[in-house]
Image 1 (spheres, rainbow, N blue to C red):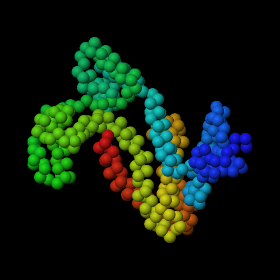
Image 2 (image 1 turned 90 degrees about the vertical axis):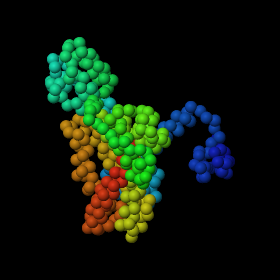
Image 3 (image 1 turned 45 degrees about the vertical axis):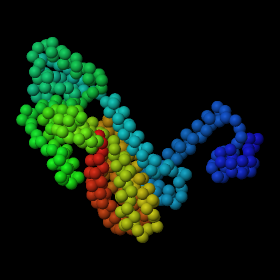
Image 4 (image 1 turned 30 degrees about the vertical axis):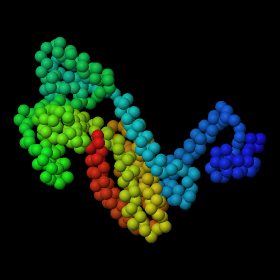
Length: 377
């Protein structure tokens, strides 16, 4: 009471001495000077408040499908974390954990013997080794004829292993019979935009493969094309294409890391179908959208929980795959029942329809989304 004021120091709203907080902006009503104890108390309070919302959100999300959305739609929002923020946090946190786990995975133990390479204790002849399994240009290894060259190659490989590189880029053997048919820029300009882009891209790629000229400026000068931003960008995509071919695993990981953003932008489209087939219910569009984000959040929470068991168990993401494939459909059905409160048969019909819509819609949307993502890689 000693530090209470009659005016909010944040927004200027008039207060009574009995007001602990400002009714307009929510700031505490105090004129006390800042102190270390205040910062510590505020920190502890914020942590426990966050933990409380996180705990309720996680518990209801995992064990009460649809109930969390029903409570949130009815106005119990201070109890739960924001569904959109929670989805992004859970999905991004999952991929961060996945990257950390991948960083600490045991690298391949590779050593050289007479005309053989030992990978994880298994000897493999050089002429039968899979070129996609090691991060080394094996074309040069196959031509090794003396011990000193072999030792040099071994030292190079060990340096790459110490640097944390465990998968390999395949050597690019240039084809001697590569040729290209010249197409002038004036000829290409006669076509519409789509055909013009396709023909120009195909010509740039054939020229790139034949001449191995990686510099876009030099290449455009050689074929007498204008150095527009589009031409420079389109020719530079050839180097990105090489990067994808050399390390497809890295490219796949890059695409996978964009999954949260794909789902985030696809969810509003998916919500339209909920809004149509549940048009007779009182739920509005935003409440359908919250329902979808809670379903997506459940998937990523399951992936996070199963991450450690999946590392210990044999197989690639075995436990999480089983839960999502077998428990996931039942969870989705129960969520529909609990939130929309319709009969079992009607819910089952809509469940099948929404799954079909999701697979078809997600496939089409994913094609364009990941195509654009690949172009920007």
